[in-house]
Length: 413
Image (tube, rainbow, N blue to C red; front, side, top):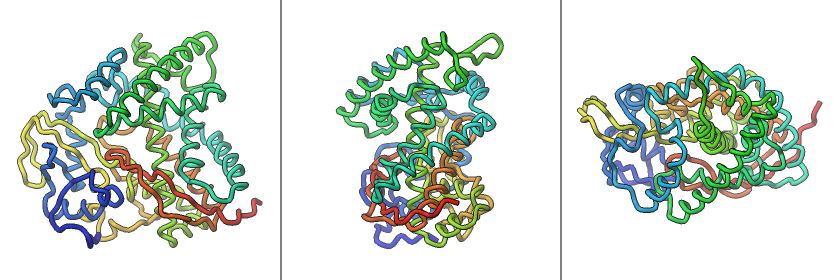
């Protein structure tokens, strides 16, 4: 089992505790064992066992729409919402049937088969970046590698000009902060500015693609249609922004968290280095072991029994995905161990489950597989120079900086 030495034996869910942010897993273990349906100081419930998390995520009688919850928002959050009223909510914040309509349209372009077509381009992007990094020797794994790969991939997929990449990256980064519940007034102002800049840029990009379509995702999204209905201009803007924001950040954390976990588990590092047969299971295990997305919220629309406790309709329930992924009740005695050969690793809930299962899961897994395996096999002696810092986020868990020594590159045959 996980060890919870060094933490208070009283179970608590406190993401503002620095120790919790750095290593939430001992805290999750206490919650699973002693208080699996935990009432937080913020009024909501947190469920930490796999079966409860799975039940809530797949329950059709739940809602992700914030307006239903009736929670009084701070003034700076209201300000952010007011500036977002000119476009529809993200698909992440929509319930059926509107969610179903949008997802059905987007799925026609965002398929595993379509993503697989991007494998060659992603491989080229990673190879080129690693060649550039080889000249530096010491790099920040997050800023110089994990952050760059998924951004260049999605930018290329959409068919946007390379010259615009740095600006789009800056605007997107301001919007990532809006996914967190503890966003500050200063971050709200940054997000409003970044959102306005990105909105103006994408509006121009859509107009350009309508006159000069290409073999790219942006053209496909414009053209997608079913039953005579396609995506409206505001819906297109909302969807593309989501690809840059949520889709990019989670893959950054997959690459960063995953590489760090492998370095800390040398036996598993050696397996990835020397055994290509683990490539199919490795990414799912990295996602399970240290999930880039730690929590996903739902409001219950009906009474539900969780871990033998009756929970009433109207409750806001946070599903602790990171905890569920290490619950020994589901994963067995090795739940706390990294095992890149784990055969059932794909049953993790890092991409959610049910109707809101992540649309970009296939893309994220493909990018993570190529980025991590090529990094390790190109630089088999890489090592951490300093202890990493964490991004201090509640929802999107990741390392902020990981300075590494690449060591001597392997000979490329």
